[in-house]
Image 1 (cartoon, helix red, strand yellow):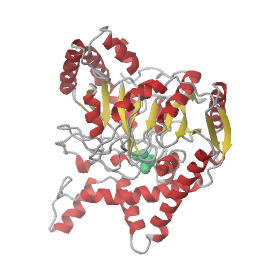
Image 2 (image 1 turned 60 degrees about the vertical axis):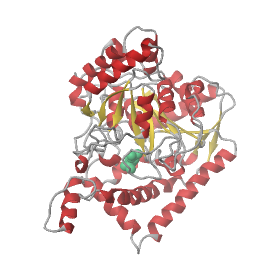
Image 3 (image 1 turned 45 degrees about the horizontal axis):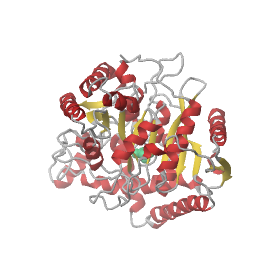
Image 4 (image 1 turned 30 degrees about the vertical axis):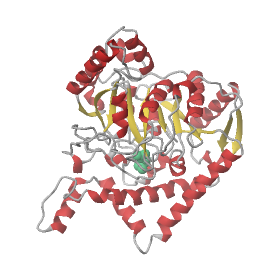
Length: 493
Ligand code: GLN
């Protein structure tokens, strides 16, 4: 790892501002780090020429005093963000040659603020998964390994490429997306910080849709402050997304390090699920103690409908996915496979373009929306969604400022370990993360400790609507108490 790629985004920004190194040098250092890291399979495409051109322009702006808030910072972008002129596949064969002629709002915001684009990052196909194993480009490998073992582990998913690249210092930060945990779970598995902001905080325009009422963009970074800087640039109202919120974006960095004295933190009783490991339970208690030590008040709360969140999520998300993915028919979008007539063309296109997990989800989603089953599944899941939201509203109305919970039920697992015959094994990964997508609330995952086998474990803080600032303040307390968790060694070089 070079001295330059070792820096946090915050420190790199400082170094650039003081002229210790140039944006071109920093970008080149990251490109040099990515090149030998092929075994991690974090990037599906690099854009070195674009990166160096952007870095050169950044150097000019730094020299003339016109630097933006992320001037010269090299970033990776999950492959479901449309980037103008750059192949964008969402990890799917059906989009393997798709080159958008437009830019997503979130990436446009990052480039407006001076960031440099290194390339596109691997993900589960259409963001459907918790391990980045369903990608058409093959699995991403977690840079972390169990102590004394060389077994390859998953980085989590679906933003697994983003998390692995940030943890392995292949980019200074990354843009991910989170529909049911896809930013927070990979962050927890790789010792990085990930925040899913409130639904509507970031524009969804130009992001390939999975489940539109749940999808949100957000950053993965190496520190809470880095995440605050990235989110400030990514967030904001966008007339092109009718669900984006017309609210000013706070300077989130101000909240990092701010006092949490007097904040009320809820510990939801129902999150002590069966089979939770002792390690995670102990870490959760430790996290509560850190917040208490910082002056917060910790109280037990009840979110009684939590146990229905996972099944309801897997109905709502799949219903929306089946509708969103109908557009890949080989006519308007998607790689066409010819057939005798149009029906056979549709069938062959969709059968060969989508992977097995995506096909399964389209079928389940279509089933729960079909005439005879709509009320029994889809309508009922929507009612459960309202109840989950109400649980949180009641807690907030009783004075709770944020909720503390584990991010995941376990540390990173082995490649192939949960991708067998029973898909529910993988779905259970999302038990602590889907609730807040259903409620539209913000959540941050912060590394908080190491497992007995030396793997990172994360804690999650859930906030009030548009209460991201409280999450940055509380996340910083955890980061300071727990310390940072750098990747053990760069074995992949
Ligand atoms: N693992 C969850 C799913 O497969 C969440 C994925 C996501 O947040 N994109 O639906």
